[in-house]
Length: 153
Image (cartoon, rainbow, N blue to C red; front, top):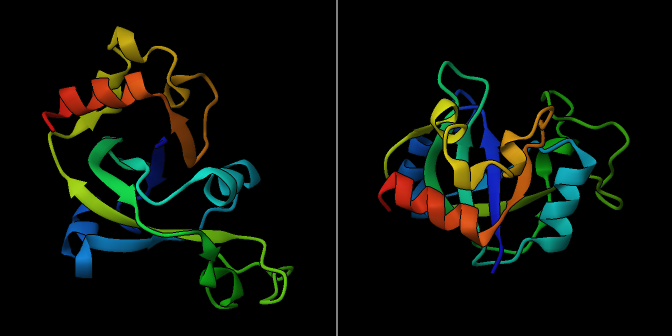
């Protein structure tokens, strides 16, 4: 089992949206960074843990705990020419971008980025490294357990 931090802008998909979705499950779409895509395509497996992170908002932070619930598949938004995630170089025969389905597991206490930065056990976390902007990043087991404890999950 692996652990991941996945960033979503709450005005696009918030953790509350996942909790309200059928089966508490949503498709994780719109990833347009090759390294983040490769994590999703090559390493994510059903059952992996996910820290659902709200980014590009007034108070960025970890909003909930989720899990990967399926194998990766082509991201449909790359083929929708009227959407912001369209990719004219992608074709159904040769998709460039993928999605995974993510299911909400627990909400817990919201953990703001400012608080995460003060926790010594998280000092090496990819999210907290200077210049880190990946929308999908690996999380160690120790970081995962620390965050679950902080969130009260």
